[in-house]
Amino acid sequence: MNKYIILLISAIVLLPAIASGQSKSYKIYDVFADRDGITNFSFSKNMLDAVNLDIGDDETGERKVIGDLNQVRFMSYNPQKGNLTGSDFLEKAAGFLPKPSYKKYEETDGETDNAEIWLLGKKKNYKECHLFISNDNNDGLHFVVSFYGDFKVKDMDGFKEMGKGFSGQE
Image (tube, rainbow, N blue to C red; front, side, top):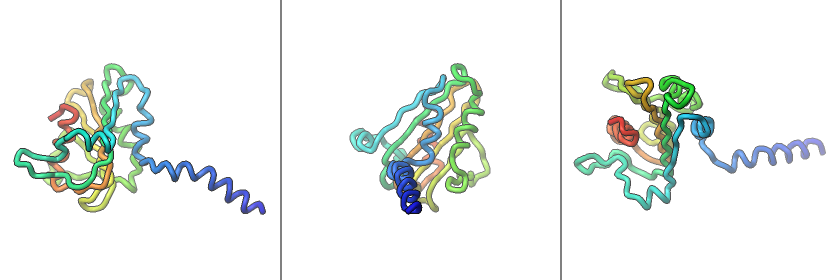
């Protein structure tokens, strides 16, 4: 009888967490939501469908992103209003991604710039893509842009530039 009670209590406790289906990466946004210097917003699937955002289109009209985006989240951090430096903010934010599940995109050309990409998915098919965008000026704005859905990225560098465009850091 005790086994059934323990099983029932476990199910009651775990069911809301399982049913919510929230990504583990939401923690990035939840932790920083009410902090000084933070501004964030998101586009839901309905908003993405209603507004024609040219996500992943280049000047030739070629799609860099194929598939469905369910949500785009955006967070900016102003170190002049917060208590962390810009680089500390990005390091802490990226630290909330569970590393065994999320993989850091490694630049193929060996160049580094002010954007770091973390991905959840396999090969070129992703469920999540998170861009951590720094500023050359550590006191300037720093950004996190997250894409959620079921999508394929044909040109990761172009996708990164598009994410930087969201932040005004092109």
